[in-house]
Every structure is written in C-alpha cells, then in structure tokens.
Length: 202
Image 1: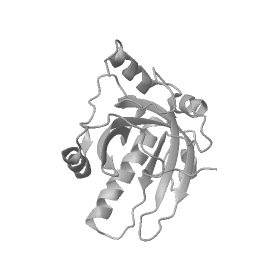
Image 2: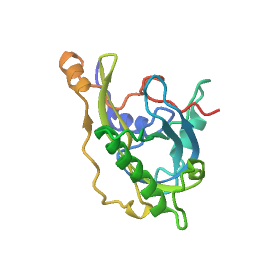
Image 3: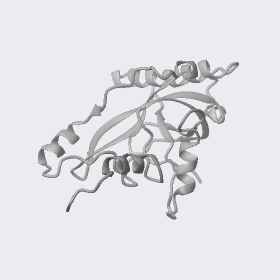
Image 4: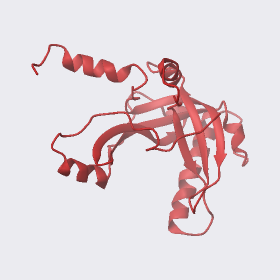
C-alpha cells in the first residue's frame, strides 16, 4: 500500500475522539460519580470500585462524551478504578495494600474541605479527587498493547501542568510478546472487554 499524506495527524486525531479514545498520561481533576463495594471471590481481595469523570481542562467530561458517542449495545463507562481493601492479615502484601488504600483516603480528605474518612465508602460519591494517569504496557492473548490507566490518586491541589508523569509500567508479558511478534507493537489499542476489570454498575 502506498502511504498517504496526513497519516500521522489522522492517527493522533483518531486517538483523541470517539469511543476508543484513550485519556493521555497526565494529572487530572476528577469527580467520583459511582461507588460500589465488591466482595472478593475465590480468595481474591474485596474491592471498592469507583467511576469518575474529568471536571476541568481540555479533557473535561471525557468519559461522558466517550460513553454517549459509543453506539454499541454493551457499552461500559471507561473512567474507573479499583481500590483493594486490606485483608488485615499482617502479611507484607497486606501492608502494601493498607498504604495504597490510605493514599486514596488521604487524597479524598485533602481534596474536599470538611471531609474525613469514616469507613463509609458510599460517601465518596460526588467527591473531588486528583488522578494521575500513566501508561501500562502489557499483552493480551500474546498481543503487545499499550493503554493508560490510573496510576495513583492525588490531592486536587497537586494537579498542575508541570507535574511529573510516571514512566510506563512495562510488564514481562509485554516484553515477551514483543520478542515473539513480527509486527511490532500496537499503540493504545482498545483493551478487549473482559480482559480488564469491569465495573458492572446497573
């Protein structure tokens, strides 16, 4: 096939619009619009699942726009994150989970005047929070892919244009897939439904 003019510009524009668009790496001001507590199954940890949308800047209402423009019957809200609940079992992993959980509660308290975490996650709905989005490089069915996701929460006041963005999280599966692939990598493709955690809100 002969290359056509304007491909690079068209490629970038396609990423920024429509139901398959990915939120670029960076810090964002957001609002939590849905909260659900999910009990772990088959030995997995309990989780607090949240849905959110961007409230300021160039990507304001990013996930609402994306959802409304998606014409598929099984469309799902893409602005989401899972906060794992500590098992309180004294393990090293559990200590890490406790610190990670506290980062979320600290960010919520620092972003919302008068709010204090009181062990009622339902009160998170409509609260403001800062979110750092960064790249994750992984593989699905042996296919190397890149996507962006919430790396960590932050206080709204820490969301600034010059904030340092974390390096991509490169998983071993990605490296292996690249080594086994003759076609290179796929930049920011859609992650197939069911491959990542979904939030089954009604």
